[in-house]
Each structure stands twice: as structure tokens, then as C-alpha cells.
Length: 371
Image (cartoon, rainbow, N blue to C red; front, side, top):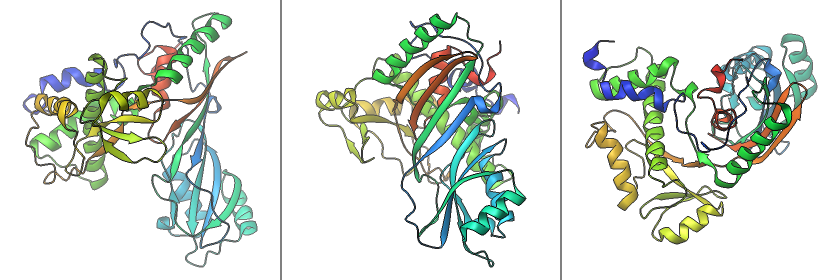
């Protein structure tokens, strides 16, 4: 990429906001170091469904456990094994390839495929290495976002401290995160190698460049949006505004997902501390509900520094949305084992486990940590 289309300010700050140098929420608590994903089974992810299949309907839901496959790869395997169209397979979210993952897929009866559970079990056992845990029919296709979150069970090997001290360190950080939460950062996997997807996304927005494939174009735009969101969260954190609501914030109710405009900052700050609500961060675009007042001024500051004031998001085909600003792990537990420290916790959909791990390990990018 030529220097004239590579903004110095963006290039200098990409690394600081894509994972490696993000600020820590618990900077005064020492981490445990160590390594993750030494073995695939060290990193286990179990999807938490938004609803259970009712037992009738044309879509066969199945819980599948696999290692070494991406979610689209599993969807393709299911379509091939069951003689179904690729478009007939649904899933709620993408899961990491380098993990032992359990998630639900749905398959619509098509091309002669009949959702008979015994036949499906025999076929998958013969054609794939997938482990099918259960199957049940339902009336609708499983679509993106049809999940509550994910449960993680992660072994951190080779901690820097002796076992008892490592457990104590991890527990102190876990207590702080469970109480106060942390910024709902986008993880480094969102931004590509050395943040290059962010730079390319900037080129799309500022220079009108287009990727040669539609899916890649959307991915690069999303990377730039996500980087701007991290920038906003970083600004809010540095100004001591992570634990409160501001007048004009667009807040989200944790229980229902409903959003509203904050008018009484003091009262809603108490609700945030109590875990009822959270302020939301901007994913800029033409359909985004923009904050107002003091909170709106913060969002405008990010736009101003990126020379995006007045940018026509609609013309740029950038939709936009809101993202919960704080990430609060639930059911967070720490256990010392012979091979290291085991962490178990649940996150709502969209939350990155690496955001929690980097706090516990005190490394910029847990996936790149070495012993």
C-alpha cells in the first residue's frame, strides 16, 4: 500500500487498539503469564443457546462437537453427509478452529433429505469425524445471533508463578472482573495480521477502494468499524468513564436487550454498577442510534480525529449498530491443576474470551504468548 493512502495517525495507533497494546482493566494486579491452546482440548467452547428446539418442524437441530474445523467447514460437512443444500444449514455464530467446540446447527429437509434422527446418526458417523450430542426438530432455521453467549473452559499452561501464587493472582483478577467488568474489546482476530484489515477498511471508507469480493469488502469495513469501537472504549476508559453512564448515552438492558437514552446519569450509573444495564459503544454507520449530549460529544471526537464528520455512511454502505460497552464474565472460576491454571467463565454473545485471558495472563495477545 502506498504511503499516500496510509494515514500516519491510523498506522501508528492500529497496533495499540487491535489487541497487543490495549490498556489493562486491572493494571495493578500481576498476571500469571503462560500459554493457551498448546493442545486443542485446552480451549473448550460451548455455545449457550437462545432457545431449545420444540421437537417438531422441518429443521433438524443437532449439537455437534468438533476439533480442527471452522464453523463453515462443519456446515459444509453436514450438507455433504446429509445430501442437503449448503443454504439449508444454519448456525448461530462462528467458532474458533483452534479449539474443541460444541455448537448447534440446523438442517432443513431438502433434496430428499428427511430429518430422521437414526439415519442422520448413522450417516454422520460414517461420513465425518463430528461428534453429535443430540438431535431435535424445530420450526425455524438457526440464524446468526440466535444464541445467548458461550461458555469457556480454558487451560493456561506454564504459568510464570508457582502454582499457589498463580491461583491467587488469577483469582484476584477474576474477582475484579466479575465485579467491575472490562471494556468489551474486539479481539485481535478481528483485525487481521498486524491490523492490516483496519488499514484496508480505512481505504474503503476514505479512498473509495473496493475489495474484489463482496464478503471481503464487508469484512474489511467491519474491521475498521471495530477498530473505531475499540478507540471509543479506550477513550472512555482513559477518561474514567467506564463505570458510569453519561447523559445522552444509549444504554442496553442486560435482561431484555432493549435500549434507551440515558436522562438521569446518576440513577442509571447505579443500575450499571448493579449489573442491570450497560452503556453502549458506537459501531458507526447510517443506521446506528447515535448518542446525544456529553456521550454524543465523545462519539463525535472519534469521528473528528478520523476526519469522518459528515461522512455519508449510507453511500459507503456501512450500516452500523450499537455494542454493549462493558463485558462482565459470569460464573468465573479458577482452579489449579497439574498442567496449569484452568479458567471457566461465560460471556454474552459478541464477547471475546481473549479479552478476559489477556487480563489474567497480562499479555497483549494471549494467542501469541510463548513460554
